[in-house]
Amino acid sequence: MAVTAYTLFSSSSGNSSFFTDGETSFLIDAGGSGKRILSALCSLDVPPCDISAVFITHEHGDHIDGLKGFCKKNSPQIHAVSLSAPQIAAPNLTVHDRIYTVKLGAFTVQSFATSHDSKCSVGYIIEHESGIRLGSMTDTGYVSEEMISALEGSAAVILESNYDEDMLIHGSYPDDLKRRIASERGHLSNKQCAEVLPYLYKNGTRRVLLSHISPENNTPQLALESALCAVNRYGLNNMSAEPAKRFEITKLI
Image (cartoon, rainbow, N blue to C red; front, side, top):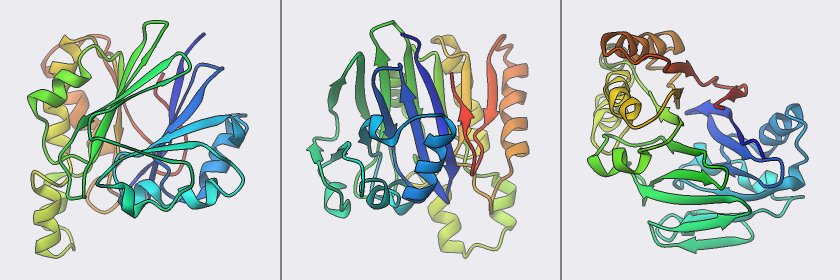
């Protein structure tokens, strides 16, 4: 069974990622709108009823706003950590401790802690019985040794590259919001994202989707330039990096 994965869309406007092996299919996050999720799945020829689960990273709207619409005619199991759960109005909600593991067909999905200004935030490791291992880490203000350890061995990773430092500093956001974004409970900058790449490469990662790119404080081009600079500087041969599209599907593997 071949595993495929995509970001359906990715930015502060909404985030959702799709994973399947042809037998079992699930999402990480359901931001945006139910209509947008349904449209993206349709373009992949995936019946919405095939989605057996949705794993939530945290309770902010750009990660959960599409749940209500998507669940009107579909009944996936929703997985969320206990501190985020009260903000998630969805049927079939399963509440977990922050670090948890779910077996889903041939997949095993395991959470790990991230740092964001939400009630609680997590990233996910996706392992498949075929041997493939994938990672997803967005909405974190810094990258800890524990996060790097969790991502170790992932062939491909969805990794946040939210803002360009100069664009944020000189942009129109109020100062308190700028401080929040750049804090250790905010988001990863292009520079921070690029600094992670050598560690991922050393531990087996060869494909990175630059995700959650801010339309106000970044551009896909700047995010990619920063990542490719690190790829070239550190000689990360055969590592590919690509910006995840804001409103369109982008293939991870």
